[in-house]
Image (cartoon, rainbow, N blue to C red; front, side, top):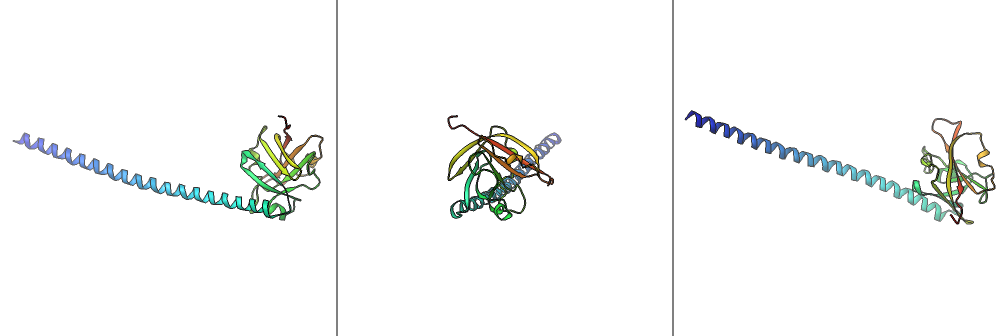
Length: 199
């Protein structure tokens, strides 16, 4: 009799333990699902915010390209998903919204030199990622004179007083210049050489 009672108690304990384990497992699954749903909501919100920022940037670029007669060109860098307006000059007002064409460089044949911010409280900081460009990456420049494609040939740091990089050249080049964070005496210079049309 005692043996049967002991067996029934063990069975009862096992049943209670199984029910508890099942209950805890279901509760943990429920909590995990809630956490996953919250994380999914956060991720969707972040994606939505990023899409909104990208949309606003696209609107600004589109307005600059379509509505402003002062735009002299369009710079495209496929690797960076960059399409941006270029205006003549490098005043703060121009660089606030656009890439600036360095006035004493070529407009078309030879060496075209462009400048832009890469950070800060500006609407336009188009050159924030040009440090990612490597030899072989493509740069496209479109103006009323036509369209040229360039391939990155060099990326280097230069002194802020080194203007030799914007000197005119026999071959068609494009030179992109931006500041280097926390070092006002240096600039980042990316240069591309024209891709032959039959290449």
